[in-house]
Amino acid sequence: MAKSDTKYWERRRGKIFNRKGGWKVGQGVYCHGYEIMTDLVGNISYVQMMMLNITGTLPSRKVADCVEAIYVTMSWPEPRIWCNHIGALSGTAKTGVVGATTAGVLAADSTMYGSRPLLESVTFIKKALEDYQSGKSIQEIVDEQIKLHQGKVQIVGFARPLVRGDERVAAVQKTMAAHNIEIGPHLDLAYKIADHLRNRHGEDININGFSAAFLSDVGLSKEQIYSLAAMCVVSGVTACYLEEYDKPAESFLPLRCEDIDYQGPPPREVPDP
Amino acid sequence: MSNKDHSQIISRDIQFAERATTRIWQETASEDNPYIAAGCRCHGYDLQELMHKRSFVEVFYLLFRGELPSGSEAELLEHLMIALINPGPRHPATRAAINTAVGKTDPAHILPIGMMVLSGEHLGGIEVEASMRFIRKRLRDDPQCVAGELLESERPPAEGDWHIAPGFGNRFGGIDIMPGKIAAQLAQLPGSGKALAWGEAFARALQPHDMGWLTSGIAAAAFCDLGFQPRAAAGLLQILSAPGLLAHGLEYANKPITALPRISDEDYHIGKK
Image (tube, rainbow over all chains, first blue to last red):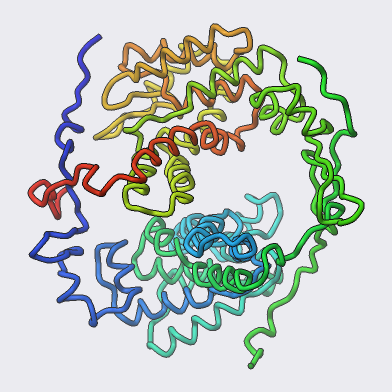
């Protein structure tokens, strides 16, 4: 057998090559060309720092404030939401706060809600804008999606599991307006699609569809948007954890044996091996 | 609190279940306390009788498949569990567990952190699931033809390893030897089936191109032959590899941070790929 070519790995053995930054002891802590302690601390918000770490570019404070507004809309102290439920169960099991919060954040990496649908949502709105600018009508774009989903009106970013409509969109729109942020082509198209869906099908844009379009207008890729949303539910999870942690163990929705409906095989004897 | 922005939020009026259901586990309540179980059955078998008569591997199989395994199925699963018991100290998941421990993180977090890192697309849970779907889809096709087809249609990445199909490819530029040996050993067992045999032939067809079995592919093929579903793949890999992750982590839990090498500033290059 020929000797394998391992040059790529040999160059990295015992060395770190990092495009984003790092700590040079006695010199500074660098992040995409900025020295964190002197250039950034006190001058930028935490969300600006998050976006700098993800994209490599420092966004304006106005844009970061809108992203922060999106984050605020995603942190409900409401334990019936799936990720927050994990926080509450962790609290009732007396798990540590970091484990509980991390578990809830991981739960929100769901195809139904939380951060992961943004991948599909950004793909949709970017393709839809290309199609729209090439002459396709809103109706054609929507009908194509409905056909793709076997007749169901389930366009990601334009439907929610439990309700129709999304109060979070209007809340973030207020922040956008307060910062005089112009509506870009992706968001403009998303509103047109939402109008069409509202009038014809009773569906509306949700915070996922809004965020995907707004952040596409900011110039972020789908992977960057997904990364930015990685922790979007974090605060609500912690809240739900703390609510239950302060109570006696197993007080969150206690279940009697009979509360689980067993539907498996009836009792049977274990055969000898 | 104003709710004027919420007027367009309409509940979908979805019907939810009255009780959770399970076909796996039956808990019989004690006469004195409905929250305390006096007996437990797994797919109909009394837990204590299983403890008395059956091995861990057999009950593991029962838990996921609903029936006790045959002798050859239990043998294949046990061999696989030993094969996958430790991803080894160089695997990123094990290194994450070690790094967690040496950093004096709560030992309760060592295993979940290692398992999360083991969920990835590279030799992790996501790849095992993708590999199961690949094998199941191509099982009726001639492995030699499939290899030829993929070698024709796919292109290797500019740098790094090439997984020409999930579970198959090269590692550090060459054929990974241990997975090949393990697959050959598993394929000799009476409980092995079409998937392991197909994988063996596929790996042979890739051999002239410096590619072969990857650990993720072995896990996938054996899971197929044991009748597990692809959606179980990631979790099963995590469970089966958990002992190694934890053992390596615990080995470092009492050691000082100096027990691991630290890359010097001279070998840390900022702004380079």
